[in-house]
Length: 323
Ligand SMILES: CC(=O)N[C@@H]1[C@@H](O)[C@H](O)[C@@H](CO)O[C@@H]1[C@]1(COP(=O)([O-])OP(=O)(O)OC[C@H]2O[C@@H](n3cnc4c(N)ncnc43)[C@H](OP(=O)(O)O)[C@@H]2O)O[C@@H]([n+]2cccc(C(N)=O)c2)[C@H](O)[C@@H]1O
Ligand SMILES: *[C@@H]1O[C@H](CO)[C@@H](O)[C@H](O)[C@H]1NC(C)=O
Ligand SMILES: CC(=O)N[C@H]1CO[C@H](CO)[C@@H](O)[C@@H]1O
Image (cartoon, rainbow, N blue to C red; front, side, top):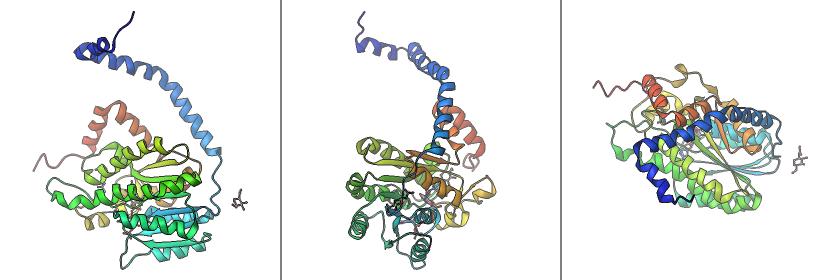
């Protein structure tokens, strides 16, 4: 018996059958989840023994490499023998040159350091062009540069444009100019998103929104550039770097964080994290979540959004309700 799409559409118009269809789709998921869990286990074990890309002589461009995880990733690539181009914004006390020196000591054959603002389209074009002029190729683009700021409804809304400009456009611009070169080498793009971009915690503000935008953009781009270019989306959280300390955040626009997160929650060491990232990227991972347990939270969020909102509201009690 033939049923036209409009006849199926009628199910959605009925409140009861509309809900019934939803559970009819959930039920098979429940039945299959034991197998999916085993599949997840198998792929985890496989990834431990998977082949790793030989980085010797390859060219890696890292933005925001003057501190934090960008710096540590530069060292990890250097140890693997990759040539580096490291980029950071020009600041009087910038450590970019020292980072370049240390990367050379650690085994990088050649390191080029450039001062540029990733949120400016012309500067992004400039450092990609400089990379090609110096090395003739590009293998990995690591869009790492980012800033954080806590948003509150009491803060001036116009102060937050730089967060979007640096975190979102500052990844998209270099990616745009690098893609033709990455296509040629079968290269990789690493994007610095955040677990906050998935979990949407309270007070996330524009920082977390910019990270969600990154995930959305690069998940789509993946289909356009594959199989030539592999995109790795990082969703990190609970990492011990200066971004999550109270001191850093109080310098940025927005409301300061009262406590250092690492004094409240267990955090992963930044160095272990940088090693895990470079290792995963070299093995062709399409997404990397560190610490791994957070992937379970992602599942809860997608399957049971109410439960997710419930524990977040317990963990971050809203002060604005009282004042
Ligand atoms: C792999 C990774 O996560 N890398 C970085 C992370 O290191 C950054 O903190 C955040 C900041 O948003 O971006 C992804 C980052 C880096 O976090 P860090 O804690 O290492 O932050 P730092 O301040 O040490 O490093 C920021 C770097 O960016 C440069 N930079 C800022 N603005 C610009 C512009 N306009 N152009 C070029 N470069 C820029 C900074 O250079 P400066 O000389 O200082 O200006 C600096 O080198 O990690 C993300 N992340 C996600 C989840 C959780 C955590 C965490 N720490 O727990 C971090 C961050 O969102 C960020 O993107
Ligand atoms: C990696 O590549 C370099 C040259 O591209 C080569 O000399 C080296 O032997 C390779 N290393 C491994 C482990 O295959
Ligand atoms: C830097 C920033 O604003 N990130 C925030 C994203 O949301 C979480 C949860 O509220 C905050 O802890 C982060 O500081």
